[in-house]
Image (cartoon, rainbow over all chains, first blue to last red; front, side, top):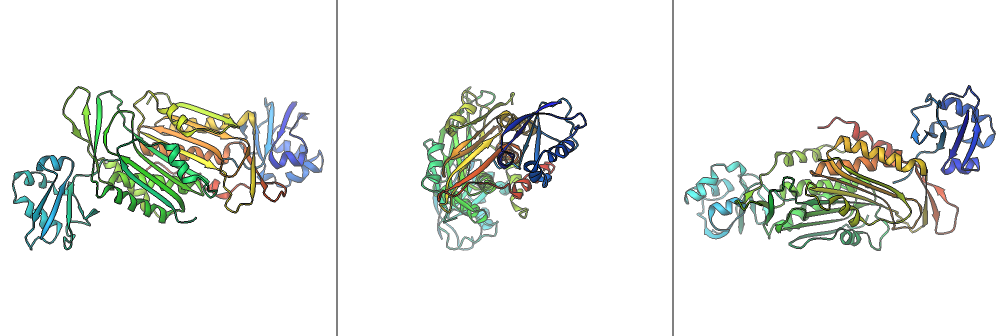
Length: 86
Length: 86
Length: 158
Length: 158
């Protein structure tokens, strides 16, 4: 499953880039699966995913509804820390 | 006791003037006493004082604290209906 | 914050919101939130020709100041502005402005909302309506809603 | 009221509050109350040189619009404006503007307050601080207060 991943704020800085195209294995079906898969990609991912509760996820520009949210049909996944706008 | 009485809004219109100087008898000590005294001055006063609950009173530019508020030392008494500013 | 700036005016002329906010925020960096309320003369049914606003000159400004001082004692406000117009007001024209400045947004919202709620029921102003068909003006009645709006300010802080 | 006017912008340039209010109120007489919130870059200790505001371009505007539409379904609003800036912001400069217009004052206060509370916690913006002494920027941490502010909107209406 081809997917665009985008990163913001200090997560972007830790990952080292702001976006990438990835080919997700077919068993990565939910946000929780994505986190598991990302952990295996190296310490820059493993580091911030040790605190998964503070990572926010948006699926095609909409906040994901929990860790069991399905990635089916999604084209762009964003990972970012809690927002500090306003 | 010499006193300035001022009237606003439809109370002013019913009374027929916006202010007057009066000499209050010495037994007029509270707002309730003033209302009784005003009732004796003619039907233009008696009329609106039949609904005393909707009459607001200010003593020297401060809202009176109830009908038993003392008039001692007061120089100006205002009578007006509920406010509709803002 | 330092002693809050409080400016209260009762006047015929219109106000400029940008100017009033600038007066509260210029040359300082301790204001993070400014909330303004502008009250405008409505005329949904196109029946109104104008409002005439009567006020009690000796008391109106003093009473609004008392309310603003209570707001400043209750929330950490850096400044408040309140301007209430009197005289003839046409549909679509401004009637009243309240501005509250604070470090934090909720204090600014609450300060402005509190001042408006109490101004409505305690500041000595009365509105008379004049109609487009030339019929005689009627005094606007006070709304029970306005008294009801005060109830929320007696709740203990969350 | 008719279908509310909603204007959402995410941009670098500053905004003009008078202009935005005029856009919501011009040529109509059904707006009796306009509430604005202006968020400003604070620097009480004179240690900040600037904020850098990062945003998620594809999502920021869409998310604020979703919040504004919820506000318009919850209160009788005639219009809402929200403008959030990004990029470099100096102390004392504007960051965000929210305006809500309604017939009635409490709807305007609540609509603007609601939009700001949810914008704070749901709109994808992040602030980084740069300090006057040249030290490296730090990302601003989200405040528990901001999540707490949402609780009041789940209360049933009085």
